[in-house]
Length: 611
Image (cartoon, rainbow, N blue to C red):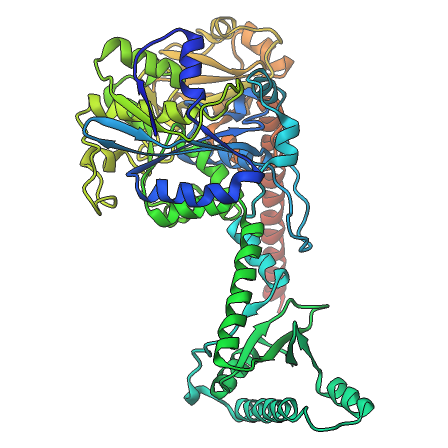
């Protein structure tokens, strides 16, 4: 059943209702049944849009991605946010465009991290930003329902670490060991295993013979015989992964046994050999164990199964802010974030080969500065361009529930399709053509830079979001320690004509209440100014007083060190001051060490001369 929608402007209330009703809400109780449904939706669609709602983004104004940030510093800021905050809602919308009609299948998953299986993993902890929680509360978000009914998850790295402790693993099928690589010790070990298992199987088959109960019990204790359910089993201790492979290889010739690797207990590894009565009984046991493993895997991975489905489908993923959203995706569902943006991109693209950010498509139209958020972007495009398109949203039932969440993912779909329509990009993907995107989409995909959409291949940055003029990083100087309450114009007036470096064009922009950037449009003047600040050369009386009161300066490299360190204080000025002090201490220690080496060498030379 489909519900038709249109891309047209409406009142705020009507606009909100338009996106609320079609989105299917998924919590822990209906997650399992939804998996098969969303799998079909993903694999039958051409694109997948995603949108995240988090407990926070940044703790201070300078910690968000700014126009002055390079690709690397923007990534470091996004990395810190992803490591501190948590995803509470993850909206997914598989969609296609067929016959000039958008067909969408939106889902909104409520998440809450917890360990469904007790495997000794560290407990989860995360930060919350009051403004983010307030915004969610105003939208009617039920935090109690999220905590009790939110879907849990584990990242791939966490699951790998916990897998040994979570349950039995089938080992049937032998190993890939080459017999030519066997040592004498390997051959002796393998023969002993074969002999032990053969004797045990003979004993099990002769159980019908009369045997004293005490002798039978002692024999089982010595041979480490026990039952796996209702079937007899034998436990074999192993000391290494090599012995696991040798045991599996040695027992391939035994027909009616199943090899199981049980959870490790107190660090002792073992293999359980389970005896079955027939080929049919063996197949039944294998199926039971596989079903148990699947259930255990679902409990452990949780929502990450949806992430794995999107990855397996290889469908292009559409987002509104790829850097911020996918640092969270990588951190929560894949593995800890790597230290550099290149490593991050390489790791992420091995899982999601095509990531499309609508910000980069807006750049193609030269309209990025008019797009403050999804709603304003859609409203602007509707006013300026005629790009409306029918939309069909699949749904199972329509309820009167007011607080239906996840409608932002519908806006991502709409904005993406509208932009592609304006740019004359065909979204009707031929069968099997998901890996070959149109040229313009291919050019705009997999770019991870700041929300300002600066050129990732150029070190120049923009200072003002609304202006296209760029400046080299070498021409930027950070200033702090000026009088409290000073405005941008006050600071610029104080600097103007106070020295030759301020006789040419320059600009000032406040980063936060206590730190500013000075932009020198004349190359070389920034370096000269930093040299003046270090030397203590006299300025005008007005600027000299500012220096006496504590005015400090640093280059962009110092700012980069702050972003790459643990110095994330609320005021950037404090961080820059600490980074500058550490640099001075390091430089002083290095100079002292060099002088000590020179003195030592001179002493050695004197001693040699005396000899």
